[in-house]
Length: 332
Image 1 (cartoon, one colour):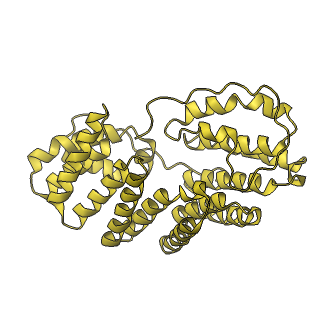
Image 2: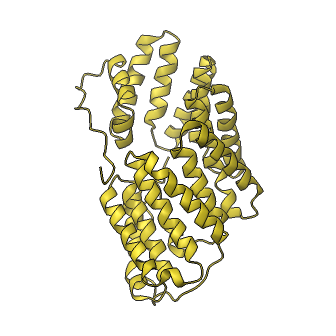
Image 3: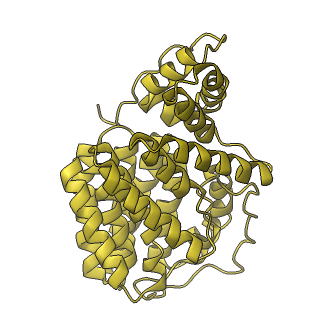
């Protein structure tokens, strides 16, 4: 689902950046180098900008760059490194950046990444007030984009009922925004709202949002594979198993046409067949799903019982590894 090619490292800027106040919803030059599917390559790309940023006279640019470098580490579970970079970014603002026009955007971005660190390291309760502060600061800055990011994260980290309310607010704000960059949040927001509803057991409502997500992406020429997978899974849970199985097989063919595979598709094909009491046919798919998904960090730490079920029903011969300990948040 991620791009196969790592982003090319940008040439180092010819001269250090000078202070500039960007429009509230504008992206920095380094933001275009993000590849969320390959945070290690993104780190390499971002570090090409770092020497000139440290030598320059724009503390806001440096603070924002450091915040995004931190995110490349938090996405890999390297939370100590991420927090250290965010500490440095805060120091940059404290030494003069806070006095600059436009400092609120940099502050909002630092808070966003701090909250993501707490949430991803297993401490969502600690992350929620940080995301709430980021939202407040982004609104003060007039940055719809970063305010939507904060609401999007509140829709992930807050308790289910609060999360759903945040997602609904975020969708309304994104649909009303005149910023094309801000409107790009809609796909993720439809998806997140769908999963919040799914986890609450409201599967029919979840399906509506998954299908909205798929339609939104298709209309823009973006990949709709994840949203189609989510919709098919909801259909299976709703008892529309034959339909779900057919759609998962279509997804399997779509990935194969790209020369790719997807362990979640293997898993769902197996689950559909198992639900249809075709256990012998399901077992190899469940085994393939297990072998693909056991290598994903968040599956091992957050979905262990799911992996055990795939391993058991798939008659996987390889022994289960030792169950990993839940990652502790920094400071615990």
